[in-house]
Image (cartoon, rainbow, N blue to C red):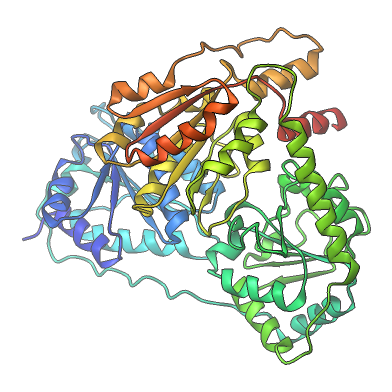
Amino acid sequence: MPTGAELFVDAIQSLGIDRIFTLVGDHLNEVLEVAGARGIPIFDMRHESGVTHAADAWARITRRPSLSLVTGGPGHTNSLTGIATAFLAASPLIAVSGSRPTTAADRQGFQDIDQIGMVRPVVKWAAQPPNASQIPFYLGRAYAEAVAGRMGPVHLTIPVDLFQAEAGAPAALPSPPAKTSIPPGASETERLLSLLRAAERPVVIAGSGVWWAEAEDELREFIEKTQIPLYTITMARGLVSDQHPLCMGYADPALNRVVLDVYREADLILVLGKRIDFRFALGGQRVFPAGARIVQVDIHPQELGMNRRLELGICADVKATLKTLLDAIRDEPGWTAGSWLTRVREWKAQWERRMAEASYSENDALHAAAFHRELKKALPPGTLFSWDAADFAHWGRAIVPALTPGGWLRLGPLATIGSGLPNALALQLANPGKPVALVSGDGSFGFYIAELDTAVRHNLSVVFIIGNDAGWGLERELQRAATGRTGTVACELRPTRYDLVMKGFGGEGETIRSLDEVQPAVRRAFASGKPYVLNVEIRGLRSPFSEWQIAGKKRA
């Protein structure tokens, strides 16, 4: 008779889950032994939160559910931050925790804690199978819950004795739900076409919904047919390259201030697969003028009109919507952009000049903007980015273009600083042979620094680019702005040689102190074929992002 561990592995293979993210623990030994014997790739890490972050990133990158497997008790509690990050990012993570034997429940057993109660607020669904034979059913149900409606994480607690037990006849494994593509209604399509045809100054904002819908080709064809300028944000960054003549860069005003002029002048803003959330000041006038006409297309009806009155809200799949629009206009004569596109391009050039001017200073210390200007020149083609927090990273996001679909990974709405490192490992794991870079501040880098060991053990040649200003730079700037004083509280760190830390783990690295060192060091790092830390000594300076944050606090 099969064991619960064997049924678990049977079930995940049937569901198409082909990798396990884990940190070993004695609740997991039976299932890991079975998985290893079956040849399932096992990505073992150094911290359970790193495990769930990497699994979340894998789900976002591959656009399908992922599996994390951690031990119970503190392993479970450690994993919660990654699960909560996936929850706000609407990422289909199946988070499984082991547990004490069922016979030890409620009897002061070792590591006995209410795991289901803890995780329930940050998952779509959580449960514990009652016996070993039910494990396939519960995994199938977890998979279905993760991908239904608004995607998101789910959780199973599986006691160790269920993995060890011989199971009776296994419960049926529910089939994964078929992916649906809900098109817009005929009246909604006609209304949207009418608005588009009448608009003289339209703009498109594309968000993660375009990525999840796999609608990158339709988006590109749509803007090329209509000649409407495009701005991208979240997982849509790079779906249409920033070098495309109709892609104008970041839709986020914190990283691309001139979009405020664009939104102010636009007579129609088409928002595709993007929540009108905090990134857009909750739909307020700080970003969108009072009279702005906004059309929003989203698969989740609760998003439509949540924070902002809409000219038209369409509850539909973004890919199906774009296909419907393209079918309707395909035989029409070419649309013309006129002077509007010229003006938008001028605004884009204005912002690029501003960023170029920011990179020059009279001070000998390296300016983050100057570093990123040189970084762009030395990057291998097709470099994929995991961006963490820090003014250093925000300067990079404002300057470095997004060129590759699925190659611009961010922290998500929970802004879980530090998760950029495990995210980068997942990004490299999903893209073997391609150049991958983490861009992080020194504060953020410290959260999961032990995962450098993971990078070395799994031969992941990520280049870790660390802006080292010996402090929590963004918080330092926020404190100085609030108090008017140069001194700070709890913001200062040591100027640690992170390149030497990387060498201690078995990788390579070097420190960059001047502008002329940037390009040669970047080329050496990517050519090394090893995990490589570039420890960049920089001045602590406000980025456009922190300026936006400070201005927002003053308005509040």
